[in-house]
Image 1 (cartoon, rainbow, N blue to C red):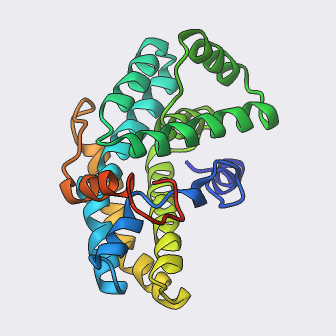
Image 2: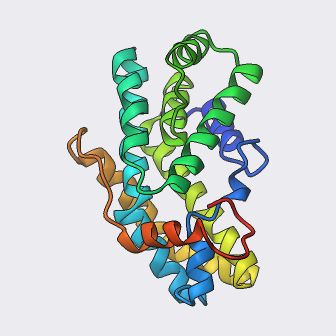
Length: 230
């Protein structure tokens, strides 16, 4: 059951004010706007639905679930393996940077304001192996330590992910704030379904298949003018 304390932590961690630098990343959407593939609320909604169902949304939901369950059971070997696997599954260098940089920033800030012993232990293990956790893995592990139920944590995390991408496109198109909210409302059932699907799948069913998203990310690396890091 989601407690008020757990809800408060989840809202704080996923707030735009939490210093992970999410505002600096567009997940390749900057290139999709440049090419005209995203130009209005309808095309934005369609593109983000694909990411949630088949792209990083699907992959990160699976990683989040696995990290949540591993931390909940104290399976440190599983957590280490997830960090390595998350890096290997990123389709492009920018996608890997987006995930790894936010994961590192999240853990670094969290241990300073919430020095939970198991979290400190995990960070030391990561440092000893000289690896950085994917953002989804770090969030999943932290949610388990805070006793936030998996379904609630998954829905909130996917919603925050989608909201950050909508915010990027609102600035890029430009798209009005109201249309941005229309897109998020249209994605609401997709987010809930994606969270439920992640819990229903085999726990080792990782992967994604959003090829156009990866292609836009690759092209973004050499885009002439850029506002975002991905």
